[in-house]
Image (cartoon, rainbow, N blue to C red; front, top):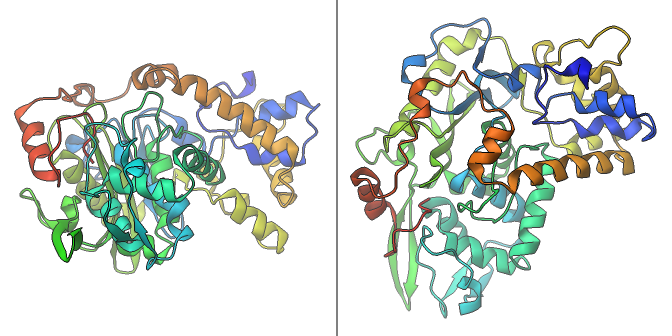
Amino acid sequence: MRDCSRLSRRAVLGLTAAALPLSVTSSASAAEAAVIGGERLARGGIQVRGATGLPTKKLTARSWIVADADTGEVLASFNAHRRLAPASTLKMLFADTVLQKFDRTRRYKVTDADLADVPAGSSLVGVKPGITYTVDQLWQGVFLRSGNDAVHVLAHMNGGIARTVAEMQARADDLQALDTHVVSPDGFDHKGQISSAYDLTLFARHGLKNPDFRGYCGTRTADFPAGGKKTFQIQNTDRLLTGAWGLGTYQGLIGVKNGYTSHAGNTFTGAATRGGRTLLVTVMHPAAGSNAVYEQTAALLDWGFGHGRSAQPVGVLVDPLSESRARAGAGGTPAHKKVPAAARTAAPAAGSPSPWRLAEGGAGTAALLGAGTWALLRRRRARIAAVAARTPAEADARVGASAEVPAAASAEGLVEGSAERAAERSVEGSAPESGGRHRR
């Protein structure tokens, strides 16, 4: 590990262990040095190459990333692997895990038990016990209103909260989203619930491949059951999609998910298509301002569609391990061959095995992902969980928050009860709430 001390320990490529004997400790250490997505993404500060014009004066977020959804190339980033509270953007992972399990036309009568464990102060769409909903309507509640009540009903349909959390964590591991620790399916401010701009972008990219996911996150309004034959209209809380709160709709926007908690502030992952090109942007925890997360997302999208066309990749959004195994088993191109040169780790000292050379051996037998890989992943997950068990602020400090964060970004502006946040809560909650921590 000393030879690779420059590299972040935040994201470890467990795949490389598949073809390596567990007894070869030096090889295991080298494997752990490979950074998910590329070494530059583990560095603090802005990462960009071959392009100018980044709107740095507008960017106060603690972490952000711009990527090409089709190629997976990361065009620019700032603290991409920094672990932060994800708020309701974690619902992208929930949807990516559960969405395909139930037919959209399936009907389900909600019980009191389905809603008993919804955290107080949650964002709600207005699900009521005794009313029968279609699965389609419940997903509209999840995507449009970020309803924790709809999330918990679907989680109970899936076998319960604990089972759903375990499945979400397994999906995150498969997506190689190793900055993510799941505590609840709704993204609420539970202690230790963390993710990163990189991981949230992985969730969005994979989710958008599902037509239902893509359709829900791009829906502006829907009619939601109120009991009997009555309905009420719900509107998507994504302001770049609807043009609410003084913002114009963003040209070509196709989703994806916003989030807010009093601890996290605002977080947003957005995707837009122009001229046949689709870009993904994630912005986490900007300085105070209810529109800031959307304005900064729009500015980064504008850059990506403009100056960003000349950008050379500084990293890559990796493919899921399951897809890499499938390609390897079918004789396709191993996933590591698609990683741009800029996204590979720096060369280790002479005499040490190259992490990416080890990755070649691992991917060559990836169909295998045997006990060696999962043992390494379990060890890595245990370390992440140990950090996540701290408060989110402690976890962030433990992984080495960059000293290069702009001064504006250090001003949290997250004091609950401010007039701006109170106004936001009063409008964006579809059901009366008690002013708790979680909003959307």
